[in-house]
Image (tube, rainbow over all chains, first blue to last red; front, side, top):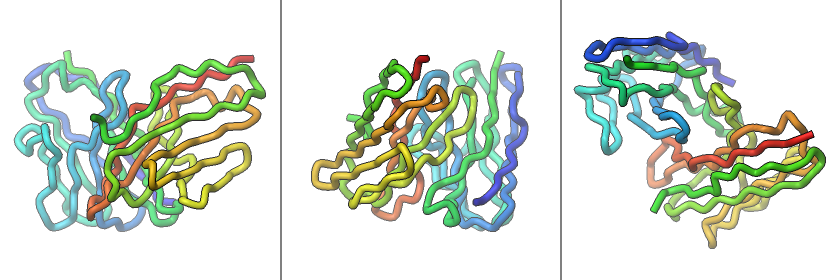
Length: 115
Length: 111
């Protein structure tokens, strides 16, 4: 199945700053997904990132706050902008993995704490 | 109403017990169904896909009832290593490829 390298694994950031999270996949994938998992909660989709087009954001998430890049079929970044303590979460990227019986593979996550 | 609903638990069971988790989903156009396992501070990992005919993988059995929009997971002969959060996950359907997650059911298997 696909292997995703996600960086950084964790960070502690000052409020008002921005953090860019990277995901690198070892194979070409059409769609990449970015999720947020707040403490004690399940995963919530932030946006879907397609190569060559703007990301599609879910209700409650906007491009100015969570800009996404998808320069090619193996890489994507998510930026958390102008951070506040409420942004403290785990952020995960995911791809549809056709080699895994139509499951989806996840990066190992970025644990973000905003102070 | 949440799109995917699960009993949050926790389920505390002794080793060797059989435990069942249930899940309902609201989008009748959903196409694919999964159970994921998430260990503490780890990313979710696919446990098994769920098919209408039901499917079994060792001690794990998953069932799907499309008419009732209901998914289940049965774990037999529970092991300590089964302790985790089990996420009911649905592919949104109607061209939506992203996953929708239930809130998860926490299982604690005790010696």
